[in-house]
Length: 204
Image (cartoon, rainbow, N blue to C red; front, side, top):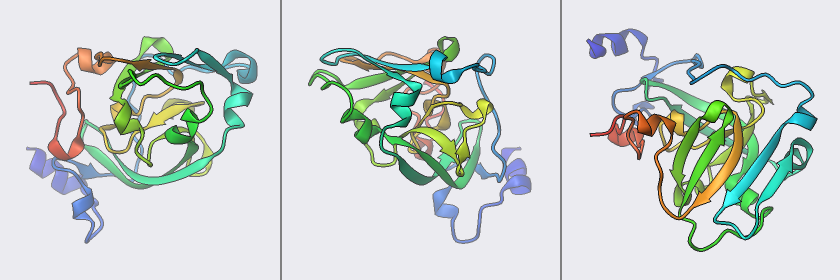
C-alpha cells in the first residue's frame, strides 16, 4: 500500500535518490504537524525569553533582543519527517549551536545530553554530541523569512540528521543533562534515536 502511495507522490529529483531515506517520499510542500495549539505572541521583545540551565556553571536567560544579536549562520539541508515526507534543499538562518555555546557560561564536563523545552510543555531530547554537528541551528528564519508561527516562530531547533520531531518548535529552554531522559514523543513510543536512515521511527 505504501509503495503505491510513494509512487503517486514521490517527486525525488532524478539522480538524488541517495538523499532520500528508506520509506520516505519527497514533497515540495511544508506540512504542519504539532502537539498543542500554535502560540501567538504580543510584544514579543518583552514577553519572550530563552532560558539555559542544568549542567552549566550558572543559568542564563536571553531576551529576544539579546538572542537576535548573536552571530548568524545559514544552513542548507534536507529534512525528513517521521510521517514519511522529506523536503530537499531547505535553507535556514539562526545561531549555530556551536556558536551559541560561546555565549553562555561554560557547560560542565558532566553534560552529555540536552533537553529542549518548548511552549505547552513539549520537550525533545538530543545527545549533546549530535547538537555539536556543524549543521545544527537555533533557527528563526526559513527561506529568508521569519518562521511562520506554525513552523516555530520565534525559535526552533534544526537537527537535520534526525527525524524532524527532534527539531523542536517554539523553543523556550535548553537544559544540559548528565543522563538521557525521554522527551514528549519518546514517552509516547517514538524511537529515542530517530535516525531516518535506519528508519528509527518507533521504539521496539
